[in-house]
Image 1: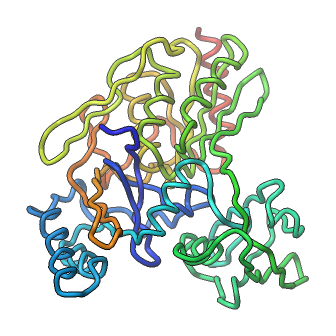
Image 2: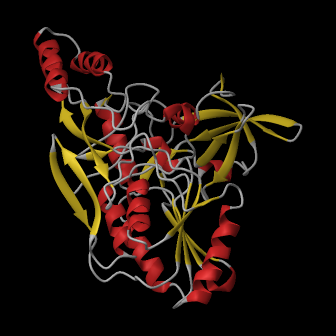
Length: 387
């Protein structure tokens, strides 16, 4: 495996998304912003077979198009569409670069996280401190009504994020975007300038009874080590809540590093590439005794599911929440003649016990919705008493 292995989910707005032996699940915007509409994205059937000759057909179509003076990227997109593989996708050169930057923990945007509510309205769920949105006075709970005149009600969050970030090929720091907002009965518009921002992929806070809560929003570069440092700094013998809710994936190497914080070596997952099985192992020396609860939901995807499955199968954590997304396919990149990149499915990964995740997700040990954190604290209290 290369050093930039990752999970990604195809972008649904323009061309798609994914990267360097990839197990799929985040888009560049998702790494920095918010929720996905999970129900609409669950694969139709578990571990759908990879189309025979899939990679060859796509790359050959791109080469023929180039020879004929046509767009290799458009030809590749048509070939991907015909294949029926819903997880393969094609990146433009700019989108690919943007995706790499996001996985390095950086992105160009305004600093908003958002979710779509049941009535289709888009609600701001977080404003990154120091970001253009924060400077403009936008607050958590504000309603986002429009972006550059486009009504966002009812749109998938991923599409709203794409509008906020602008076209991947020409949006840059300093470009302007007009936001239509509402707070209570007050409606107004705000013009903000996009900026280069860093993602806060790992945040740590202390709960009651010295419980440490480690929230991992995405597995960007360095996030695995941040998890390990947070575990090392936590009060001895006190419990840990590993919050993977809404974690749409990222670099698989970082997920394995995070697993190493809680495991003393051993198997994390297996995966296949064109029928050949490979294995991922944790590093030795992790904390194997501290009480641990992992929080998950329908937005827990790919690399986050790999980590969850490893902790659950190996009896290291009690998993609390709702069933995870179910994204366990493996993609590999093929660079096309015009510099665009096709990310094409080559196989699937499995948990240490051999469970397939794709199309199934991971069922938690304890089902819980809005009360998941409270249930986690109760579980940790019981585990602490038993230890």
